[in-house]
Image (cartoon, rainbow, N blue to C red; front, side):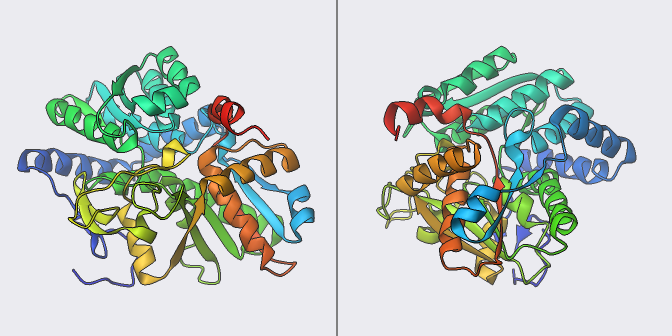
Length: 398
C-alpha cells in the first residue's frame, strides 16, 4: 500500500503501511461487526450527547490548560501543561474507557476484557464498567502488580477481577497476550477494551477517536489563552494513546513541531528500553503491523521502562506512520532523566506527574535549553503520579 498525504485510517485499517488486521477469520467477522457498529454509533446524536455528558459531569472535561509560571521563569520559555492528570481516575485513560464501555453496552456485550501496565487503563476501564453495569476482567503482569499496588486496590474496589500474569517479563506485553487470548474465547459476549492505539483494526481507530478530545481542547485553549499556537507539542509514547490524542489537534498546523518521547530505560541495549521507533523495525505482533523491538532473528524482544505504562515492545501504527513521513519527531528519555523531571515538576509547580508523563516533561526541559525566550512548549501531562509514589519513595527519594 502506498503512503498518501492523508493522516486518516483506510477502510482496511492502515495508516500508510502500518496497521491492518492480522487475525483469524472468525475474529475478522467479529471485528468487522465492531468496526461497523463503531462507525455508525460515533456519529449518532444520542451517543454523542451521552458520551459528552459523561465526559463533562463524570470525567471532569474539559481538562484545564495550565501556564506553568514557575517552570517558565526558571527555564526562560513558556510552558503550558494540558492537565489530563485532573481527569476522574487520574489520567487520559478515562476518555476512551467511557467510549468503549458505552459501545460495548449498546452492542449487547456483558463483559469488558482489558490489559493494563501502570494500572491507569485498568482503573479507568473498571470505573467505566461499574458505571454502565458490565463485568470486567483486567490482566496485569505480576511485576506491575507489585509496582503499582495502589491501582490494583482501586480496580478491586471498583469490582474488577484483576488477573495476574506470570509469563515472560510479567509486564505489559504479557498482559496484552493474556487478555487477547481470553478475549478470543469470549468474543461473542465480551468486548476487548484495549488501552492504547495498538492492536488489530478497528481498535487503534476507536481509541484514537475517543482520545482526540485532548487535541481539540488543547488547540482551542492555546488560542484562547495566548492567541497563538504552540511551537512544540510534547507527549510520552508507549503504545501512544495520549500522544495521538493531543497530536491530532495539531496535525494540519505544520508550524507546530510534534515530539513523541519514547522510554530509553537503562540504555540503548536490546531489552533495556522500550523505544520501538528509535530502536525497532517493521514487524507484526498482537494482530497489527508496526515498529517493534526485535532481536536479530526477528523475535519480539523484551521491553523495559521505569514507567510501567510505557514498557510495550511496539507502538501504535499511526505513530509509525507519522514518523515515517516526518510529521512527528520521536526522541528518547532515559529512566534517570524521567525521574529527575518527576521531582522537578513536583517541587517547582506543585504537580506530581506520572512517571510516564515525566518523560514528556524531561524532553520539554531539554527543548527549553535550546529555544528562544518566547518559545511556547505544550506538554501533555497524561496522568498523575499517585500510583508511583511508593516506588519513588522506596527507590529514588531525593
